[in-house]
Length: 280
Image (cartoon, rainbow, N blue to C red):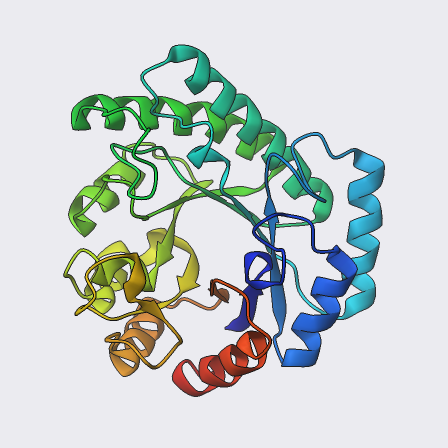
């Protein structure tokens, strides 16, 4: 496995304004093998970034010595694929079609996709969406994006996230299977599962070969809300069980630490913890 850090873990990474070259250098200095790039509506990498600009970034990646295999998108929080407005849903698909193209230009193998939301815990203005309708619209979005993913040869990895969808590994598994598409996979997030009061190692075993990529976070169940996310090794994740489950299902790709917000010691501390908890 390759130990990676998210671009969002950099200073100003969430704003999308941290220079790519600096992010690569800082990730390497901290001891990571790889960096996950992130795309947003604003910043250094957006759905409107040109081919020439992506080629420049790709040269920076190649010169860094780090692997950059994945691209993460948080654009669904601003343009949800399951929004009651059909206009918003169409915009969400168009944005992610463009994102998949940029992922290919950058040489990435996979892209994280948030499939929409029934609710957004940190955004009370998000309109309520009935669960069955959200799943229908999410399926329509994934089906449309799968065609783009196949064309540009980038895996579309659907994330289990705090969006009111897919609380069960069986439901998530069946959703992925419903497409019967080699490019549609799961982007499994270890820490998110504890917020559902479930065990990440069981999700890994049940999802198995469907897991395209893995996000790493830790979580304190006692908090029970967003404040529960914490430094790796300081929460309630059973790391030996998670490591064993990943080995059991044959997962060998990137494990990306998604740690926020940034602080001066975050990258170095996270790199040390990742090597200890999930040896390559």
